[in-house]
Image (cartoon, rainbow, N blue to C red; front, top):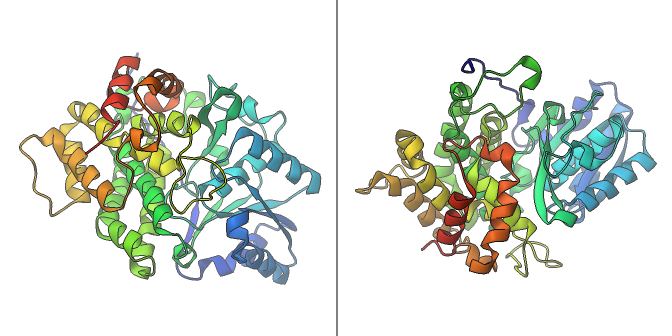
Length: 423
C-alpha cells in the first residue's frame, strides 16, 4: 500500500467571549430559521439560561422551545427519548444545545435522526452498531457549552452508553459537527470544583492523546470516500494541542480551587475549544478507549458535585484514570512528544532521570492536586473486573487505530491492572 499523504481539518464557526451567548438570536436569524429547539438538561435549565437563550430569539421572529430532558452521560435510551420528543414537537429548522457535552451530544443525535431515516444504532460505530453514514444534510446546530471539557462544540462525535451491551460508544461523522460554537466563559463560572476537575481532565487528555496519536503519514493511503474525521496527528492538530496544554498549565488548578477566577475560566474555555479542534481531527486513543467500559460498567460510585440519583464515573474522570499508564505504554513510539507534552503542562517541573516517567508523573501530581480518584479501584473496580473492562476497550477499534503502537488485549489488561492505584 502507498503511504498516506493527505490530512484533513475541520472546525465549526466560532464566537468566543464574555456575552457571546446573548447574540444567538441574531446568529440564527442569518440562517433564515423560524422554529428552533433549545436542548439542555434539568440542572442547566434550572439556572434559567436556556430559557433566556430561547427568549432572545423572539426579537428576530424565531419561535424557540426548550427541551430539558437530556440525561447527564447520555444513553441510547435517553437519546432515543429525546429524538422522539423532537420528532413529535417538530419540524425544527435548527437546534441550540446549551449545557455540557451531554446536551451537545444529545442535540447532535436529535439533529441526525430528525433529518435522516432509521434509528440510532444504524449510525453507531461498528461493532456496537451498523456504522452507517448519514445520507441527508443536517440542520444548523449551535453549541453553547456551560462546562469546560468535552470539546463537543468542536467535534464530529456523539457519545453514549449502549445499555444492553454495557458499553460506551459513539457516532462519528463530519456532518455532526456543530455549525457554530458559542463559547461564553461567563457561563462556566457556576461549575463546581468536582465538575471542573473531571471535565478539565477531558480537555487535558484530548490534547495529550491527539498530540501523541499516530502521525497521519503512517496510515495506508485512503480513497476520498474512505476519509474519516480522525486522520492522525498532523501539523494543524499539533498547534491546537500544544496551545491547549500551555493554557491548562496556567489555569487548571486555579479554576478548580477558585471558581470565580474569570481569567482562569476563560483560559479553560479556550483550552477546551482548542483541544477539541485538535482531537476532533487527529483523534484520541487508549485513555478514551479505556474510559468507555469504565463508565459503562460502573457499579456504585457517586462522584462529588454531580447529580446524586445514580452511580456514574464522569467521562473526564474515566479518561484520566488510566492515562498515566497509557502514556507509559505509548512513550516508546514518540519519546520526544511525550517529553514535550510534559514540559508544556508543567513548565517548572524538573525532568526525571527516566524520561518515560516525566508525563505520567506530571499527570499524577495534577490529579492528586485537583482530587481525581486514585485509580480505577477508587471508583469501585478490582482485579476480577479486568477481563470485562478489556472486552469493552477492544470494541473501541476506531480509537485504538489512532494509537501510535499496536494495542493487544494483553496490553490493555496490563494498563488496567497497573491503574488500580496510581500513587
